[in-house]
Amino acid sequence: MSGVAHIYDAELSPSKEDIAARHAGIVTLLGSCRLVDPDDVVGIEVLVGADIDGRTVQLPVTYRPSEINPEHTLTEMDHSVLGHRWVSNALGDPVAVAQFIRTILEGDDGATRSDGVPAVLDLRGSGEEGKVDVGDVEFYEVTRQRAVGTVNLDGRVRSFQLRMPHLLRRMNTGGTSADTARLHLIGWLPALPEKRVVVAELSIRD
Image (cartoon, rainbow, N blue to C red; front, side, top):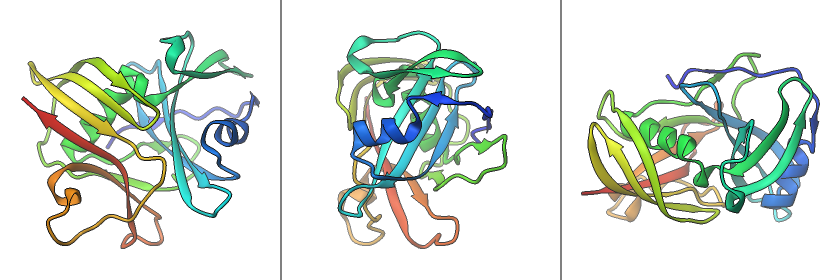
């Protein structure tokens, strides 16, 4: 279990709907799913919604009390409980990337919300490594859909590529496609577990 994400009854400006529309073309925000920062500093959230063509798309973001990197900042936000926040592309935030990698490798699931609201997608990593010690993340390249760099796994520095596609496509469960060769973070609607989509793809190399 990725833990419990503490959710505040707060007013946000701009709203998550505004952020999703501006930065991901989401016209209808369906909800979100979360992971948890073990140090309880960084909010890690994947906003999920429909674009103008009715396709299901995602926007992975983080929330911090201070700016981590201007290149990855999407906007600033006023939070009525936590104060001023910086909203960033999650693929440029080492804390978020470390948690996506950990969740995938350990075969862990997404966080639960403290307010009891269910996640829009249930999440599950495809790995089977049990407990993994994920250390420092260093970036070589970051885009809105991909992060490339190195990560310390169990004391060993490994190269990685983490991709979080804008468009949530169905998981290919047969054949020998790339879907079977990579590690994944899979999501599904709680009522439709058979209809799985690829939230993230992970490649790890020596």
